Image (cartoon, rainbow, N blue to C red; front, top):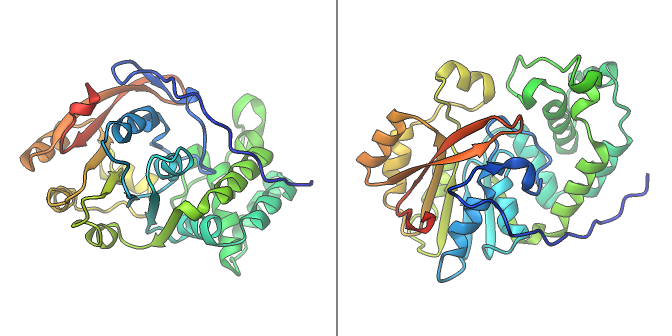
Length: 298
């Protein structure tokens, strides 16, 4: 299949207000990942946050990048001059390394040319990766054929899938290739580093022109669920709040709604607010927004 560089379309900025329910299906899908707890729902609120600033931030740091939807939105929509994505997980990091500084076109072609069957997927995932390119392809493949997009060890592969489509139900090769090529078209605006989030944060704490979007691996369901969803789930949340309290630039966190998190955040002088949203299954939920100053939400 001949692949072309797809033109990045202007998106409709008219979205549901923060007091209404944000439906993730109304937000442009930029990331090649499907993530449990992904932050597509936050995009309209994110736009409002940065658009309310008198000056465009020179840098947006996303220290727990994961699927990177917020950093990608900032780059595509020119909401910050530059974007820094940080990810510790070596498999997820391999994808970002290829997308930002590697041969992303080759990855897109490999995805389009892959013949999806249960046997082919199983065989491809069992082969030891010989390069970063191999690891990146395996990561996207596993993300797309595992139950719920879960990439932690032990996650099973889809068998029945949606509408009886089996393992192919979340494998959209042309769409994935287009997203990869689109990212390639704006990747000069984005930097990526595989590192511990705290290391990356420390480098920019004194810069008032840097803003942080922080979506750490956390679930109100507890540590067991955290281990199931994330390979790197252990995090000192108290230390995270203590560290970010001293940032010269602005900071916004998103978390699962939790009384413990509200208490922890307020003890470090952060403000909190619940945001209504709908997940990909159209279930109405609330998520916790935490920041130094949330007046822009009104």
